[in-house]
Image (cartoon, rainbow over all chains, first blue to last red; front, top):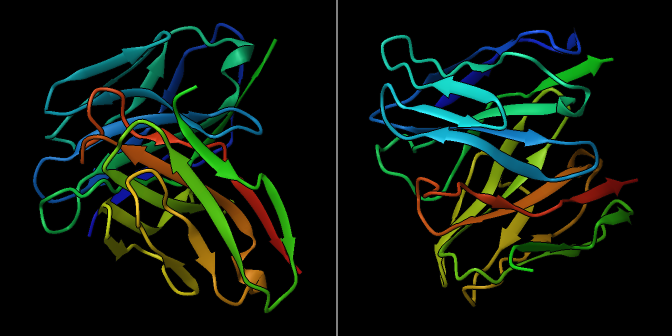
Length: 116
Length: 115
């Protein structure tokens, strides 16, 4: 079946540090890949997405590139801010049969804390 | 405001009680789904629907029931609550099975405690 594995957390950084959160996946066919962010006490918001190999998703200074050869979709940001403190989820959209019915498979989430 | 609305935001149940978590969207999305979020486990799919009258089970369906009589509403029913169902529940919707341009839209969640 499909699965998503994220790097272990929590991650604690100082403001302006470089961020990488690793994400690898297992899926049949050609999944769409997502990063969602959850701020304290809120629901999930789409951060960025990519739908095919070598696509780069980007938003709010965050980037991730769809690497089919390494089945990865690592999240990066060059200079984090305190306001980036949140939980980050990597996810894919594809079911085991090779078609997609509006379902997402999530990684376990990575807690990011940024200190001033 | 367009989006996914979940009610209630918080609920405490006693073991064995039943209740319905409500989810409504006003974006005319065909695809809707329910997830539960537990610490260290990410979000896990409970049930999903690809349109009115069509539902199917996800990864963790036991103890939950759904129906989809309209495009807008997708309620989740707990038949006999158990402490293992203590969790945060999220409803999501999309116009496209792969998420489309804007991905999936999530509600703000229902925090359920079963005592």
